Structures are given as structure tokens and as C-alpha cells.
Image (cartoon, rainbow, N blue to C red; front, side, top):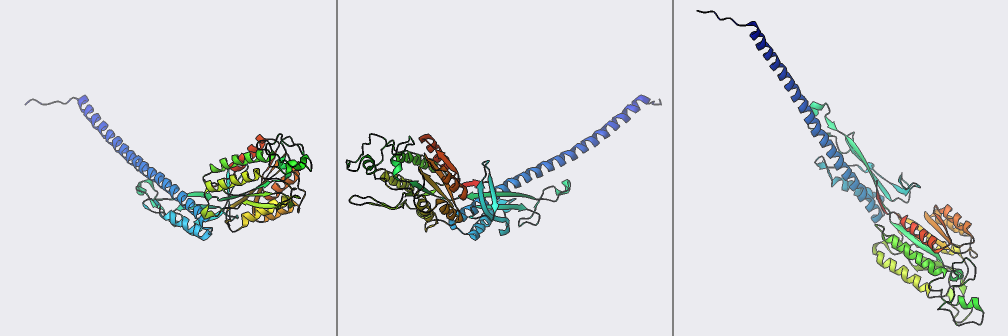
Length: 410
């Protein structure tokens, strides 16, 4: 029998192969563990992101529903109930999303000078709902269990989301000066009438001034017609709002009776277009009423002084009358081309308006007394616009129409 001899280098090679195979097994096992952890992390992270997305949708829906109910019902309790109900109609992590009434705040959204929105809780008149949506941390909706809580060391997932929505119904009153100076041209000179006026009266017994004041305004170059053009632009811009503002029209002068037969009487202020009722308001009809009323004034006489407080007081009556909504945002746009010379101090009327939560934006048109209009705006928290030509007047009314936001979500 021949003995078998093993070479020592062959034995070493075999031992090295076994060692490398063992190391590879350890590496593969480690990589599998890392892969499982990464897969678990990926799945749970994706699930957490899904929960955040669902929570955002639920809180946004709840806030919008609450804001809509606030305007529609004018009742804070019903608005809170609507927010809670609509939250429950949305599912988060496969279950109806629950919030408590305490998670719903009612307040007011206003626009800051920078153009951003600010929510103030409990501010009145209220126009906004804020919903604090929470998952976990003792909220109405419990924390969501994760799929791989044992691997990641976290048993569940908690998060929160805040949503604010305002559906701001706006009530506007256009309060327009229709005194005798609205017959003048745009030169800024008193008793400078655009000539020739195709509508000029044939009555000449009392001189040129009376002849013009017994006539309708010049159809293209009088101050009144220039104002009518700016009002048309205002209506165009207001129509672009998601919810156009319900708008009334007041025109004012001073109490005056024409000293000629048939002795027509001009009241100090008239509601040419009353504020439409909320449930029956249709923008096309509302707009058409204003256009017809402006056209009617364009065909009539303009006589009398400037009782500015009468125009403010009548506008306040429209915005606090039976057709006004308690929680609506109430805005007067006051225009004059002159200086008040009749009635009580308009600053007193402005203070009365401010006490009822009414904002007055003021627009002067070639006015010799811009200071009073500026103070009225300051007292009521409005904006003041000083204009001296048609382009500036149009720009003022365009900006005013664009500053009436009615729907927003934060």
C-alpha cells in the first residue's frame, strides 16, 4: 500500500476558502438586515407622508366648510358644527378624522400692508374659521400605529396641521356726490362747463349758470360722466371676484328745491339702488341696477350744495338695514369733488360709522378740501385717494374693487 501525502499549501488553501465563505455569509446577513430596516423605514416614511397629506385635506375641508356656514347662517355655533362634521367626512389613516369643537377657532382675517393675511381670534365681525387638526397627543384622533414599530423603535405617529379659511361676504355702498359742481369739466376751475353741451336747456332768463344747472351733464366731458366711467371699471373688477360684493348706490347733494315750475325737490341723499337681499342677490341684476341708476342721473339735473354727512349717514343706513348681514364686511366708497358746506360735520358721521364697524374709503376728485376726506378714511380705517384726472380716478376705483377679497385659505 502506498501512503498518501497531503501538501501543506493545499491544506492552507482549503482553510482560506472556508474563512472567506464565512465572511461572505456574515456580510450578506448584515446587508439583509440593513435592507429590511431600509425597507421598513421607506414604507413607514411613505405612510407618514400619506397621513400628512390626508390630514391637510381634512383640515382644509373642515375650515372651508366652517367659513361657508359662518357666512350662510350668521351663526358661530353652526359654523363650528359644520367644521367638525366635515372633518369627520374625511378619512385619515383609513378612519374618519375626528376633531373637537375646542379645536375650531372663530375670528377675523384681515389683509396686512404687505399683502399677507392675519387671523385674529375672537375679533368681530367674524369672517374666518381656524381648524387645529391633530393626531395623537391626547387629540380626538389617536396616534396612528406604524407597520414596523418594533424595528424602528417608534410605536406610532403623531402630527398636526392648521388650516384657516375665510369666506368674506362684502357689502359695498357707493356714496357719490351729485352736487351742481359735477356739471363742471375736468379743468379744476369752478363754473367751467364743457361746451358745447348738446343737452343744454333753452332757458336763458337767469343767465348761463342757471341754463347749465337746469341741463343734464355733458355726455362725455362732465365730471359726472367721468365718474360714471370709473364706476363702470369698478363693476368690471368687482365681477372678477369669486363672490362679487352685494352693492348699493347712494347719491347725495343738499336739500334743494328748484325755484321754477314744477319746483322739483332734490333730497339731501337718496338710495338709488338699495342693498340687495343676500338670498336673492345675483350679480348681473345688481350690476344692471347700478348702471341704470347712473344713466338716469346722467339724464337729469344736478343742483344743490355738498351735504357730505347726509351721504355717509344714508350709506350707513343701507349697510345696517334689514338686507345687511350681521357678519359681512361693510364698506362705503365715498366720492366728492368739493368741500362740504351743508349738514353736520362729516367727521361726526364718520365716527358714527366706525362705531358700527363700517370702513369708509374716500376718493377726492379735484377737491379743494382733501383734508376732510383723509380724516374720514383715517377714522374708519379706510384708504384715501386723491385724484385730479380721469386716469387717476379710474385707477383708484380699480384698486378699490381689487381690495375686496372674499375667499382665502391659509
